Image (cartoon, rainbow, N blue to C red; front, side):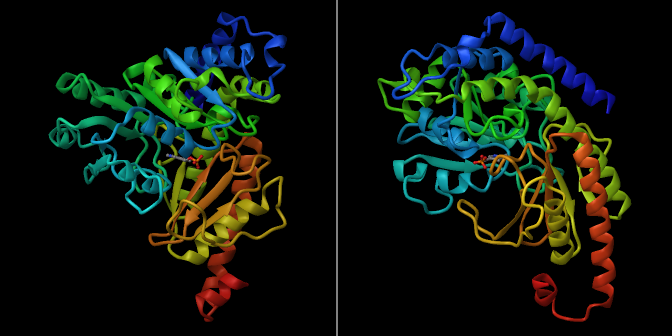
Length: 408
Ligand SMILES: *Cc1c(COP(=O)(O)O)cnc(C)c1O
């Protein structure tokens, strides 16, 4: 917990200094409409983000609707027909399968003649740097890394560890563009991947860097020329980042960034406490309570779909919004399996808020993340523990089919 507080303090200092350096002021938050030409506050906030990330340039917009959208802008921005992209941290996040064309989807990279190659992680969950180097061809333009675990049985990668792999890549090929899916990683450490050689990082403002206040938005941050290429995809070639009305959202985006180091710290504390308590209940968790964190996600393995569902439902029942509704597994856009989501959040899909979700497939792993306040985390963890114990007792006495129990 002391370590988390030190990281939050360091990040708070960085964010504050970026606001000072850009002389942030009230007038910057008045916003624009229509084309959004000459929105000085929007441009200034992007410079604040760039400073915080130690990067040349940032595209930070409410019109980037999700992390997937931000990542798509970067991929389509820098790749050209005939190029190849190598995924260095195994299969990318579920929603990217369609973007890349691993799954048939209109408009995918594959349709544009851009091929991909996936290098699995080593059996102990590390980046297989040697194989990544072997797989580079003269057509490889992008090597893609995912910092957080996503919905996969793998660890999150620390920025230092990523930096080591970036350096070996650069030593082999200095023309490679390094992209990092930074979702859930922001402010969990004192450095972002841009500080150790990533060319572009992408993420969502309804996760870490929005501080729980940003109502929507995403970012692409990194080298100026590459951010411009992503901006051309975002609006239109020749127009790029020059347009984009902020519609009164500059204030929550700026205030959200200001709060983000602290709120991410709160969410990390929730993750540590949850890991400790759930492990005491005999559940397998990753990371463990005393492991260092590089993202917000805690993977919790359950022995049955019943326990997994009870877990998600208890998280929902502890939420400030929609606590009275019971989540069930259902199909969801962008995901292949049915997903159960406990998301009683103020911002729809906002997963810096305390949430739990799980694709309903074996092994029955639930993903628990976020928490705007540590206190809310404590109360939720207590209720979840009760629900799991109760579901075990019911499981022992119930001889009915599982589906009947799940209906009930
Ligand atoms: C959430 C997430 C995404 C996609 O973000 P959306 O905002 O849901 O589109 C991509 N990668 C990782 C690792 C994520 O956690």
